[in-house]
Length: 129
Length: 350
Image 1 (cartoon, rainbow over the protein chains, first blue to last red):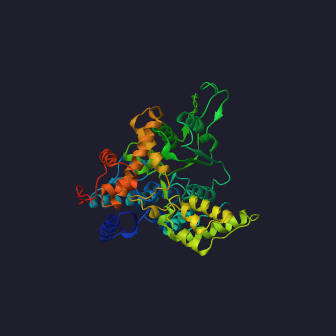
Image 2 (cartoon, rainbow over the protein chains, first blue to last red; image 1 turned 90 degrees about the vertical axis):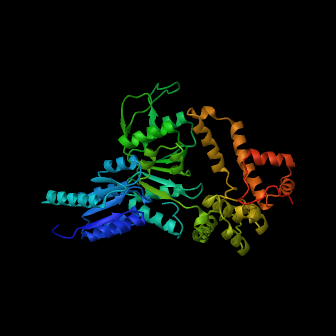
């Protein structure tokens, strides 16, 4: 990685949020966290330079992960998004429909997540240049 | 612009913030909350804050119409589609094109109709009854319900795929008893509003004793009940004593458990739904006699359990309070499966 990438992680489970924050920071990512979709949207809109990638849970109060993805893809097209879910197929199908770049089912392997993030960031960099 | 959303509780603050953030996204929205909490006001605010303001706002009450009628109401029909369809009629999905379709009481919609609504949400188009042509509909669907849809979903009474599609944005309004900090503001707001509304009448503002009672009450009927009580106080000038009769608090009656005895609607509603789930044919299985028995059993069970708990499961005392024979009480305990609290000794009679 040529620079520090800024990631937004949204999940209403504090445990998952802390685990992802710790792991991704260890992997030299700049991590911002939000505990629900509404908080996530506010952070997205407030971040001047934008986030390089967003990781979001799907089933959350107020604004669901599908809501976050839809708003993100409309207002910040090109920003890759990884959806994580522990629920059945319905929200997953909706996440794909809303153009999530990747859907990971909990429990997932953290190394697998890191590899996916790297792949998506490289893909984005290539499409930009 | 109509009434504003009144409140300072975290729940209400969050809802106001949410409306500002998402109203212009047009994402499917589900508004949940008990009867009378103000779901319709939230829906109205979403519409007013959106870029669809001024475009059609069509409301359909899904609980008010039988299935067949609701279907033709939503999707419309062609001339000759069925006996009596003398001319083409446009459905609400078509009429709401470009604007908002508010599906109130969506939790009462039958499963077959739920799948038809899902189909429109998935594809953005539908066919009116008796038509082979597809009609496109760019409609922002906002649904509301007083049901716990997550549990309806687990019971097979509500489609999971429709639930997830509708709840892209999910707004849950807490009952008034869980946001008591909003109560003084709401009382103040409605007193002012009714003061203007009834300015020709001799208005009596509630005294400090009445106000104390209002603030201590749990409001099972939520904001709607508060509005009715305040109107009555202002017009009729209820005394503190008569107010006690008006405010049927769970605490005053001491009902145990989920404490909503003043509001029979959810009870009646759940009994009807139980009947529906027993038979796919839906309304065909509905029998007033069966409903009466179920509702009566539930109410009797709650009342008998309450009296038994109050008397420490002394059945002689309970029969006197309930004014039934000992034999009847024993039969009811067995029939209604009323269980004593852990550790209670049933054989001990005082």
